[in-house]
Image 1 (spheres, rainbow, N blue to C red):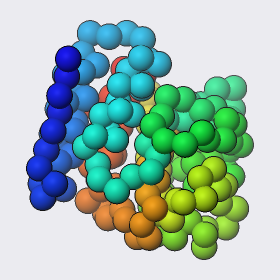
Image 2 (image 1 turned 180 degrees about the vertical axis):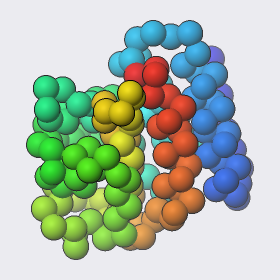
Image 3 (image 1 turned 60 degrees about the vertical axis):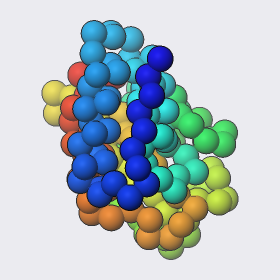
Image 4 (image 1 turned 45 degrees about the horizontal axis):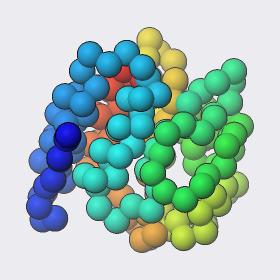
Length: 160
């Protein structure tokens, strides 16, 4: 059994360093990408406060397809360039959105979401997935959150 707990007041830099270390330990030696994404979604959920959705969308035949996640049921397929996830996947750039309702073309899978952070997972120069985090709080995600999830994405790219 794995039990990863951090105090609520843990600074972001330390929180994301510990998250990346835990992700590394949890996925070490496991070759099944879906199993790893499932555990990583649960791990992110336990490490990052104030989320209402945390998980993956996988790149499949030119579109994003829902992967393992924690949260309410979600949209199954997202075309590239649409919504926050599709924009991140198409551009290959992190999307940090303070108010999803102001984002042109936002796809509302959970009406409670107010802000979103989407980080592409890149392997061999290609986006293979995105990590999607939603929060019911506006402007929940800082640049530090973005950098922390980007470091996580780089660390686990060969394991999903």
